[in-house]
Image (cartoon, rainbow, N blue to C red; front, top):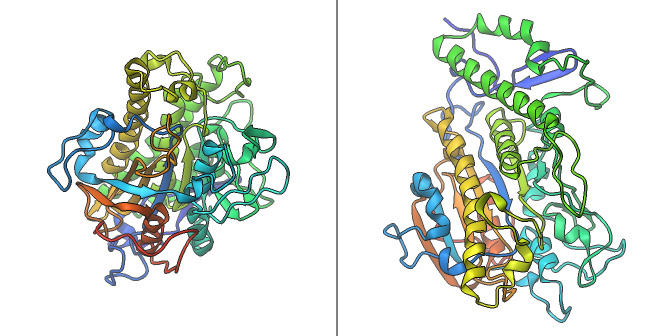
Length: 444
C-alpha cells in the first residue's frame, strides 16, 4: 500500500524547492465547504486579468441573457470554454469616474478596478487608493502557501511621474495595492517569475544558476527518485506530466533570452522577455497555471498591458497604437481594429482557461477549483465610461459558481460586489471593499 504523503510536500535540492501537484497518494480533495477530509480540501484560487482601453462593446456584449446566448465576435475565441464562464453585464466602477477630478480616466480605471476606491489625483509621492481584493485574500492566506500572491504584467510601467492628466504613473500600471499607500509592482520578466516560484534560499535570495543553466529539476533529481518509490502508476504519470510542463517553460524562457529584444520607442525590453508579445502572454499564463497547480500561491493578478497603453498589434494586422485607436470617434474602420485587438486578448484568455481545464485535480479539473476574473475598468474607450463594464468570470469556484450564462445586473451595480462574492467563495467573510454594497447574487 502506498504511504500517504503531505499536500505540502516539495522536492528540494541546493536551494531549490519544487512544489508538487495534487497526487492520489496525498489523499482525497474535497469541494469548498466540504468536510470529507479537512486536511486536504480542494483549494479555491483567484486570478484577476486586466486589459486596457476598454472594448468595442457592440462586439463584446451578448444580446440574449441566460444560457442561450450567442458569443459575440470578441468572445468567439472562448467557444471551447463557453460552459465554464459567466459573462457579467451591468457592473460599474464608480470610483473610476472623475467626481470633480477632471481628466485621468485611464489612471482611475486601473487604480479603482480591484480597490473600489477613488485614486488621489497626484503625480507626487502622496499616492493613495485602497487595499485591493487580491491583497485582502493574500493577507488571509499568507500562512497557507509559499507566496501570498503573485503580481504579473505584460508591459513595463513606471512607478512615478505624470502619466495621465496629473495622475501618477503608478495608477496606470499597477492593479494590486497592499494598502491605500502601498502599490505592488508587477513582474514582467517570466524568468524572474519562474525563479520566484521554484527557486529559494534561506536568505531569500534567488539561486545563482551556473554557466550550464541547469534545470531546477536537475537539483531535485535524487529527491524525486525517493518520492517515486511511494507512488502508484497514476501518480507517476501525473508527476511526469507536471515535470514535463515545468521543463517546457524553462526551455521556452531560455529560447526567449536568445531572441532579439522588442523594439519600441518607449523602452528597451530586458532580456528573457520574448520579443513576441503573444508568446510573452502565454508564458505568463503558463506560470499562473503552474503556480495554481502546485499551490505555490492561490492569488494572482495579471495586467496584460498598462491602462492607456499604446502598444501595437501587428500580429492581428493592427499597426496603429491601441490607446489612440480607442478614441475611434465611431469610425467603423477604427472600431474594427479595436475589435481585433480585443479578440486577440480573449484568444490568449482561452489559452489559459484551456490549460487549467486540461489539468485533472481530484474529481474535477484545476479550472473547477479556480475563479478567473477578466475585464477592464473602461467599457467604451472612446467615451471613457465606467459602467456596463466588460467582465468575465471563468471557473467553478470549487462548485460555488454556476457558469455557462450571460447575466445582466441592474445598472450601477458596484463591480466590487463581485469581488466580495469571490472572497466569500474563498471562505473569507468581509463586510465591504471600497464602494461595495454587498455580495453579488445570481452567480451560483
